[in-house]
Amino acid sequence: DIAKKLCNEFGNDKIILLTREGKLGLGSAYVFGLKQARGDFVILMDADLSHHPKHIPEMIALQDKNNYDIVTGTRYSLGGGVSGWDFKRKLISRGANFLAQFLLEPGVSDLTGSFRLYRKNVLKDLMEMMFRAKKMGFSVGEVPIEFVDRFYGESK
Image (tube, rainbow, N blue to C red; front, side):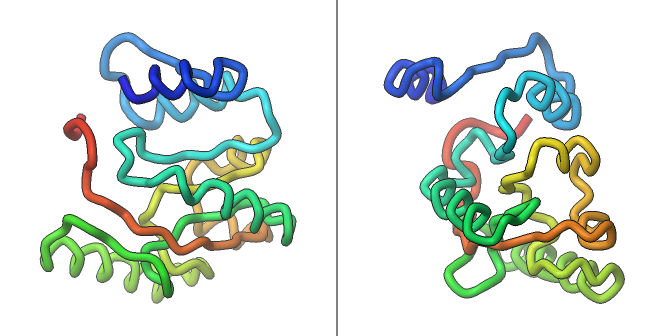
């Protein structure tokens, strides 16, 4: 419903609403969207506004300034955060990121987040493997964001 309102407000040339029948999974949704993408960059974010679109201009500006292959939103640097999670969920997320930092050395502070800007050709090669991005020599920038636990709708 929100996406339809945005399409009406900003025009179908700026926002493209893609729908699929049935529950086919997040991974197949990424592949479907990537096949439809017309530009050189792709932004992945939660449609329920857990990732606020207000961060998109900052992500684009950082990419443009530093020519990054990937810019990722981070909850775990100054200016980022999480709203709506209890202590246990925050602890699990922080723990998973700490463990990933220790074992994988990905060079980013928020490995489990999913609000990212990718060069389209890089995303085709990676399909959600941030730690491989650094190992393959791709540059990665981070923008502090605040994650809000499911603002609209419910988890699928």
